[in-house]
Image (cartoon, rainbow, N blue to C red; front, side, top):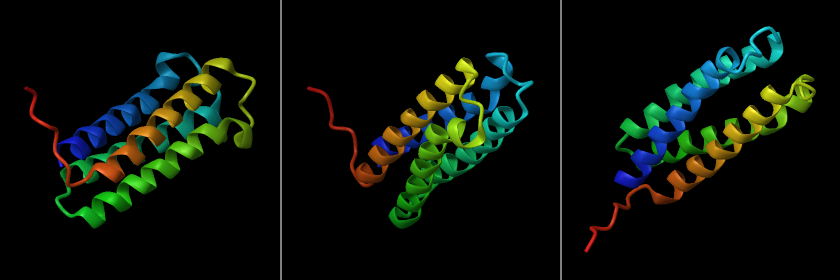
Length: 119
């Protein structure tokens, strides 16, 4: 459970970065990119925190899968929403999306497992 919890908190951190990245990387004037990052980032924070705090395997797995889908959305959204020409927004969104996918899927399959003690 510790591993899944840690991974879910990392997804929340990725969501926080997604939320602040338009302002930090200077693409907040691109309305579609900014709102996409802010909304998806906020949802990732809420769902990842819910998964991290959940003690129910079913709820945790469902929230992790939703986060993975949100990560997939981040990867494809620059092309769908039409801001793929803005390199900072494009690459940031793709990288954050890929990180969220990996972390959320990993958390999905590790719930109930704990970190092995080091020898």
